[in-house]
Image (cartoon, rainbow, N blue to C red; front, side, top):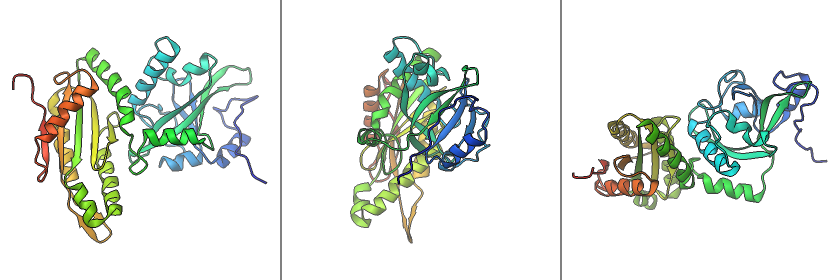
Length: 323
């Protein structure tokens, strides 16, 4: 007889303070489960979730979900979506997690959580309320559904690259819109980079596509290492990637990061007994100097990329007006 995953239905006691039965259910559940207080602080995580995210069960206790397991940009993008959907302003803080529940709706959404090593972990979470014995809401529970429908699986493939685990270009519009709006209020800089591995097609023809896949995975990992948790790296096509850097004080910071990325990507990749030499060319553009919308900013970065040698690689910034 097939065994169904345990359900989570807090009844007479709060799940923020776990009892024996709750712990048994959590220990046997195959997906990720988080217990949060109303301020968005993590109170507990189940073993399967801790293992998946490379964490100890007590490591995250008391820490805020945003900034630890989730990039702040995730909350901002979700706040924008909910504000449009609900017809009222939803702040980009812990209230994002309970906004639909407070209004009597269910909430199941695709989030990008972070492994301890910085790699993205796309995860669909169903949110519910935790109540004490008097029925008062004392926290939230986030459960990864045990099974996904075909539509949900297709949505996952649409928004995340199955090879590298990075988001795809589909996530950029909402994230860019939110980042640019915030930068306009704070008079800060948002930079966009296009990154292209030079000679990637020839590499695949010479060494095979499986080696090419290893190179792409290594490139994604190196991008993550050089970027902050608040930044976004996405996989485009072939050997092309993009990155969005937020909350910069000066455009020079973007150039510095771009050069660090170019240096990191120039290191050979070890594949079996072979060492595959690499180089990359990078084009950089930024708000507000090169536009205030995603498309013109990416076009400016693409023009800068085109000015870089396709053989030697390197970094180029889009020219400013009058240059």
